[in-house]
Image (cartoon, rainbow over all chains, first blue to last red; front, top):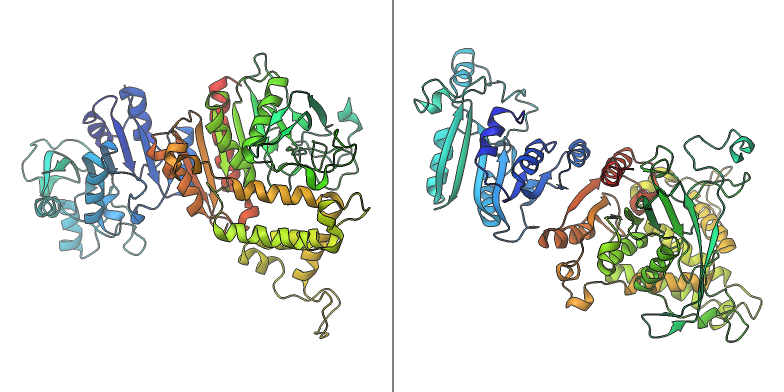
Length: 200
Length: 389
């Protein structure tokens, strides 16, 4: 069994064995490594952080050091079965354009992001009058890389506008567990949202 | 044995004292230009030990002015170690405790391999300007024969920077089954017009020197010193970044000077540096070899045979690639390496790309830049693991 973080495990479970995967913002390559070992996928990770390049090599992952804000022009249309982006959507300059790029180079997109409407974050802002911080959003306001935070409702609204069809949604509460009453008030109870989608 | 004789000045992570070896090839080699060499000799150095099936062999390809002397010292009086000593040695990224590392002086060179200064068996005179133009493809063919000679069926990796990296690429194209990894550092898939322009100025500097004698300067007991020196000075400017030059020299005047003298002698430190580089280069490099090497650079274009499509040129490669570029390299900028990466991605090849933050310019591939050493070392760990070295 893999020791993947629960959110990454959900993503991994959605990926068909032997498919081709592009991981945007692949970090140290943990997810791709797991996918390569347990699901025999092939593909690449894109990562901007220099320290992570060596970690990816150590994990046996093909990694390309690049800035996602430059787009995915290195890749031809329809190159991948899945384009995955975990906890990165909120940190890119144009998330809406990147979603289009994901569905240009891949058939199915998978994203995870911190839900900004999570009740704890609302509490931070509404009651304490402070910029919200949480497990998934652990930065102070002045040094956060997360420049485009959104909520579950925001994301689904954008997908609707863009004619992106959501195939599946999973949510995790603050301790990265599935909420006890799944599907009830996700926008309030989910700390992390996980989506699988394709062009409508 | 030799270890005891070494002074303390040879560091423990050096391959130590090394001696070049020679390999003679008596079968004619047909060259890309249509001519052929009846036979030739390659001088090479080897570090580390081959394993039983010689699967731990690494070929190092040198750049424009490089030699077979990639690491260690040829004598205890050497001021400096081999040109890539930063990366080759015990415990270094290309670890000689694990790998058997081979580096040869390329054909057309002037450090012991057959080249313009060698005697042409047909005339009994030095080849000089008659030495055929050699291409990257020709080098790769001649290196493949060296591999045969050393009993190396498959290289664990072929590595090089700049023109050396082009040889690694060409190997992957020509002999896909004879290397497991291609390590392509500070490279370009072909030269730009600007690159060729710099080479042309360098060549014109040499060819217009009155001592050049149409390349037959050896028979005239002459050396086109001024031309070769200018060519090297020009080259050096392209190897460094603006920032590196500013940091190293700024506008400093030479020591002991505090004002302008309003003449054309050396006044600025950067002038002194360039002249020193040029003058010392002339002592150990041959002008005809310099011309040949720049032409090999200009002609390198593996995509040309595929209608300019690099993806097609690389379609048959099976080696895994590590491509490394340096942010301040303007001779072969990261964008040029990205062209190689893109073609490999297009062909679904195994490729890792690192863009190293470094201020040194093109020369960064010879420098101990920590992130670069880390990436190369980590990658070589993976190469070693694959072959059980």
